[in-house]
Image 1 (cartoon, protein in one colour):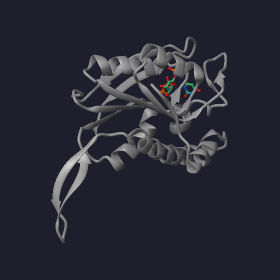
Image 2 (image 1 turned 135 degrees about the vertical axis):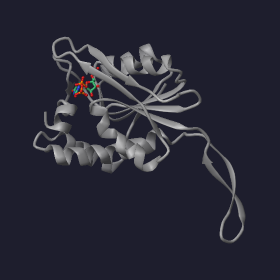
Image 3 (image 1 turned 90 degrees about the horizontal axis):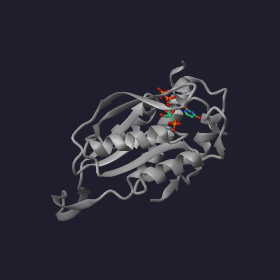
Image 4 (image 1 turned 30 degrees about the horizontal axis):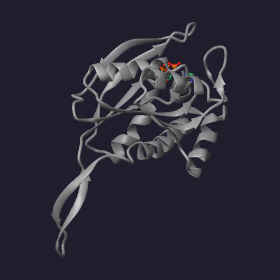
Amino acid sequence: MPLHVLNHPLGAHVLTHLRDKTTKPALFRTLSYQIGLLLALEATRDLATEDKSIETPLETMTGRVLAKPLAVVPILRAGLGMLQPFHDIFPDVAVGYVGLERDHTTAVARNYYCKLPPLAGTRVVIVDPMLATGGSAAHAIKVIKEAGGTEIVFVCIVASPEGVAVVHQEHPEIAIYTGSLDRQLNDKKYILPGLGDFGDRLYGT
Ligand code: PRP
Ligand code: URA
């Protein structure tokens, strides 16, 4: 499935300030919201709609409304920084949580929490700002599939080529939406040029 890289001047502007190491957590949260909103719009561009007959103040017309429920699943904890935009533009969205944490030495993600709404017949949008080795994303997609999710997309702010390759290898049908496709991983499995540890910068840890 395709890799969609955000192509919007505001996206580029916001991403540059997110990458800047002098950006403090308060601004970092605002910027995460802004790029999350742009990505939420991109990742839902192909949502199915259906006819709905309504009365305008002047006459009857047939409009279009969303045909399927939507669920968003942030990967804890950094994914929480991308949740609010979905709430703001899709007030009825259901929210699930998958808690994953990379081991600092091995970079292998450990699953410590999972709480999901019913997923059958739902478009599921997994959000996690960083797609590095791809281990967290591939694991979260597997968890969502095991819970009954069939229509899944993955949304991140920065992706590495290595992470994209892992997700496409393990889950070839999953579309990935990203704010940027960066150059590579370093020897500690951080993305270059990247923006550092997203969770730490979001929460000041
Ligand atoms: C970060 C990030 C992803 C993961 C990506 O989370 O938010 O979940 O790393 O790395 P991967 O593609 O190599 O798996 P982290 O494990 O640092 O946890 P946090 O969100 O609690 O900070
Ligand atoms: N997790 C992050 O927060 N940043 C990276 O560069 C890689 C994993």
